[in-house]
Image (cartoon, rainbow, N blue to C red; front, side, top):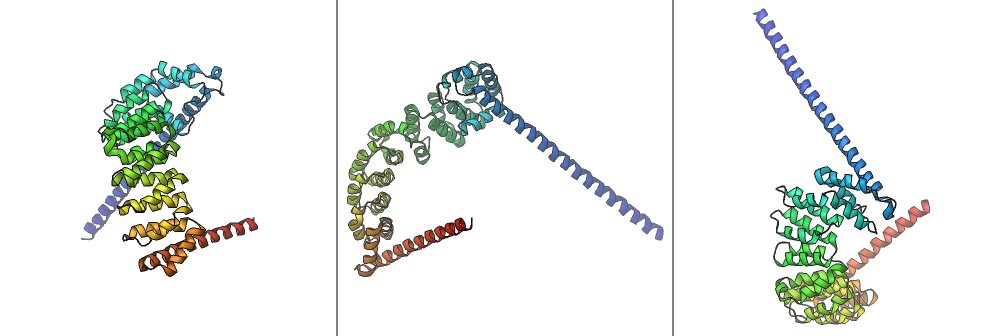
Length: 378
């Protein structure tokens, strides 16, 4: 009986030792795999860094004569074949190291095309891999290679939403009227989400196409979004058509026109926005009040005081916020309303706005005091 127990104990010990050995072996294997993975990743990162340095060195010091054409062609051939080399290009484009913005651009592009990079990117745009398609569109547009707008504009119909987002980013990088039209048509034809398209149409190169689209009947169903994009451009030419849209557009158009005029930031827009405070749509009234707050034009004080008695609570809220943003005259009007306005809701909203303004002022004073204290200690 005793010998059986001893044998059982020995068997248990042997089993436990075997299991412990297996666990240690497995752990050692996992540690080895992690170390190998780190070594491979480190080697890849060092190789990538060397390639990026080679690109910068091949560009020379700034003169066309300093371009190292053979090196550029060698790097371009590598990018035509290898995913990692294309990712290096994207990193350099994002860092604004490529393409060269001066006289070197034309010979730079010529070298890349001769090395077959453009041909490779064109093929990649038709790849089965969504990642490859999106990357190709970004590299093509980011490097300013020929035909980018027309080629990648077709990809706004890509079935993959991430590819469409990459194409929109690429078209923005082209910074041309052709690219703006491609984005506008993709928005019109529901291939791009309007808000995503608007985010890409905010610079001077998009103004002329936006103004044309605003008057094009085929863009009527996306006219509010076109108006919103115009407001983000900061272009003076956008003010007059936006004011007309605010006066005569449908409700959605008036809402977006109000928002766009506020973002445009021109004091001459105050008159039409004050008139819009009497619009039949509560949403238009609220947006007009918010736009006047952005313009900080004191001429809207009286109309905003009247709006504190609006039937819609969110309109009253926007009116109070606008008065709080108008400085001394607005704050004086809020104090008067808080004490003497006949509408109790208006008094309540005025008190809330005053408390908010006071709270912000105290917070700013506290930050300034802390900064002064730190400066004194330093």
